[in-house]
Each structure stands twice: as structure tokens, then as C-alpha cells.
Image (cartoon, rainbow, N blue to C red; front, side, top):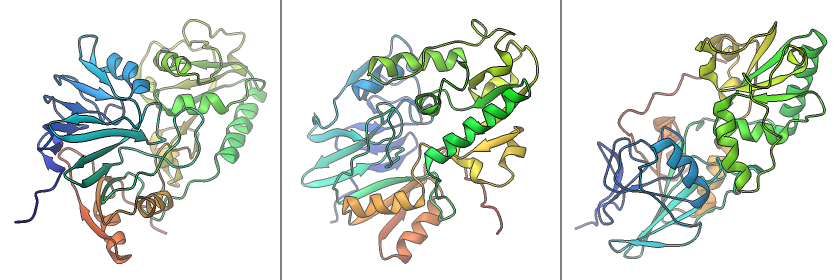
Length: 337
């Protein structure tokens, strides 16, 4: 009889029956191996969490002070009921990891979310050889090809200076964990004062503890005054747009930083003045090159354009399988060209 798959989809997410643990479960479980601390990969209530040291503080904060969070350094293997588990850098956010699972000579790697190009606010991606690779596909269509980040940062600075000329504050919406820190590390404070929302400031602390260089925290609601309003750039979580407690001192312009801003009408849909294409996920080309680098004999696809990427890989002669998780959102339709 053929051997059952080392990792399979259950109602609670991806499960390793031999090891008795889940990877990034969508519901509370006994043992949760966590690739990174974003909310769609880590939920409260599990009896035990395992993650990387640089992810542990953020995960503890998000799961609650009584959550049992254990640490496993990159590259070090832990035996779970005879299954060897290890973490390897994913290049997505601070502490993000691919999860390598080995049992009876069989090696699977779960990618988590990943980005292979350099990011000076997290550990650099490392390809992990395996027989079976499970890849995300958030941006798994040929349409998605990211522009050079240096050019995008120049666009942000130009937008900021233009707003300053009009006396408008510059509101840049970016996810509080990962995207905000990546932008902060790249922005030029000589252009003007930079402020962050408190939710961004609380994530900045563990980044600094890991030696990531970020500008000093100047927090909205505490430090942002009417005098600096027209010169300031403010990094805010997207949800703050619907919260009434933000201190306003005059006119402002808005922008959103996301890979989805590659869509022509996304700024209008997000109700912002402009958008900047910045992503912490692999684009289509990165996904393909990563699959080749692993040397995997078979590939499972999850999280995103699952069926589309699976079909593309099969056309390229790769043994690919769709892996649908319960509750995953259907990705948006691509623009008609």
C-alpha cells in the first residue's frame, strides 16, 4: 500500500499525523507549529506553540500572555514523535520560516509566506531541498511581477514632497507587522518627520531587539502636532481609516502600500489617492524559481491562486496538486487586458 501523505489538510488546517502537530492551524489545536505571527497563520487558543526565536515575542503578544510559546532556532531540528521538524528563513517578515518535516527518509517543506529578494528587516530566504514542496500562491499568476523596490521608494518620497509643497500630511497605509517596518527602514528621514500609529510602534520594539535599524518612534496622538502636520509622513494600519480617535490637524493625502496596488483601479477601491506596489510575498517568477531551487518531485499549492498556479505547473511538466484549506478567501479576478 502507498504511504499516506506526511502532511494533509484537515478541518483545523495542515496536519502531520505521524508527528501529532498542525502547521499554521486555523483553529485551536494541541500542538501548533507556526511559520510566522500574522493573524491568518496563527490563531489563539492552542495548547502549545512552536516558532522561531525572533517570531516568539510577537506571537506571544498576539496569542496572549498565558499562551505557551516555545522557540526553535533556524536550522535546528526537533523530534516530535519521531518526526524531525526544523525552521528555515522565509524572507517574509521578522522570524518568518519555512517548515521542514522529515520522517522515514521523506522530506516535505511548507513554505509559509515567503519572498526571495533581499529585505533588510528580516532574515534572508534560503531554499530548502525536499521531495515535496508546499508553496503559497497569494500572487501566483504571471500578471504579478514586482517592480524594483528602490524605484518605488523614490515614488513615495516624491509623493511625500509634493504633499509637503501643498501643506498636506502624507498618510501611508501599510500593515502594522512587516510591511510598516520594511518601509520605515527604507524611508529617508531627511525629507521630513516620520510618525507611526501605536499599533506599528508596538511591533517596532521586537524588530529593534533583533538589531533591525528603524527611525526613532514618533507616535501619532502623542507626538504629532499641528506645527509638523504639513511636513509629516504617517504610517498607519489600514483599519485606522474607520477609527474616529485619530488626531487631525488639517488636510492630508492618502496612499496604500501593497502588492495589490498593481491592479489599475485598486486605489479607487481602497479609497486612497494613490498606491505603491510593495509586497512581502513572492511574485510569480519568484515562486517558479523557488520551486526549481528545492528540487521537489511534487508540489502542493495553497493560499491564493491555487487552481491557476497548479494548472500552470502541470503545463510545465511539474507534478502539482491543489491543496484547499477551509476558510481561505478566493483571490480577486485579474484585470482584463
